[in-house]
Amino acid sequence: MNNIGFPILFTLVIIIIQTGCSSDSKLEDKLDAQLRNKLSEMKQENADLPLKCFVKFVGNFDENKEEKLKEIGVKVLTVLKEIVIIEGRPDAISKVASLDFVHSISLSQTRYSTD
Image (spheres, rainbow, N blue to C red):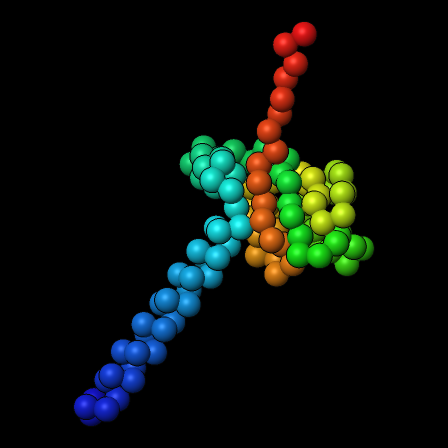
C-alpha cells in the first residue's frame, strides 16, 4: 500500500468506529441511570417482564408518534402533552430510545402507601 492510502484508510476506520460508538452513547444518554441499570440487570437475568417508563418527546405527542410506539411493541398508558407513560418489554424500551422524536426515558417508580 502506498504512503497516501494507509493514512486515508486509517482515518476512515477511526471515523467508522467513533460513529458507531457515539450512536450507542446517544441512545444511552436518553435513558436515566435507573432505567439503564434495570435494563442491564434484566438482560443478565434473561428477564422479559414489561417495564413502565416515562417518555419525554420533542414536541407534543400525536397519532404518528403513537403509531410508531405501537409498531415497536409498546403500550401507551397515559398522555400528558409531550410526556407519556408507556409499558413494554426491555427490547422494545431500548428501541423507543432510538426514535429521533424521543428526548428522554426514565423508569417509572411504584409508590406504596403506608396507610
